[in-house]
Length: 101
Image 1 (cartoon, rainbow, N blue to C red):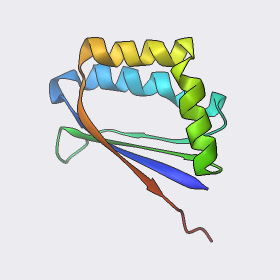
Image 2 (cartoon, rainbow, N blue to C red; image 1 turned 135 degrees about the vertical axis):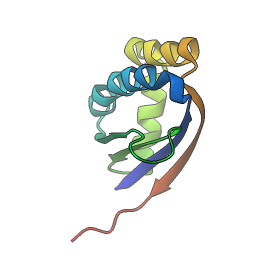
Image 3 (cartoon, helix red, strand yellow; image 1 turned 90 degrees about the horizontal axis):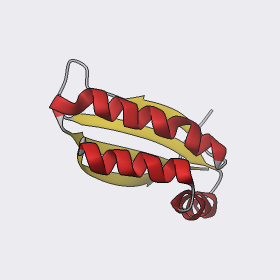
C-alpha cells in the first residue's frame, strides 16, 4: 500500500472554495480504486495549510489512477474549479508507506 500525503498552501480567504474542491475529489479517488482518508482544513493553527491523505494498493495503481483521472470529465471539472477559484496557492505531494498493527 502507498499513501499519498498532500500538503496544500491555500488562500485563507477562499477556505469555502477549497472545501468545495476537496468534496469534489473525495468520491473520485474511490472511483479509481483508492481509499480517501479525508481532507484536513485549518483549525486553531496556521490558516493557510490544509492536508489530504489517500491510499492505493501500490504506486502502479496510483499511476493508473492519475492516467485515468486525466481523461475523466468529473476530474477535469474539479481541476477547472481549482484553476478558476485559485484557492490553492501551492502543494507538495509525498508518498508514504504505512506501518499498521
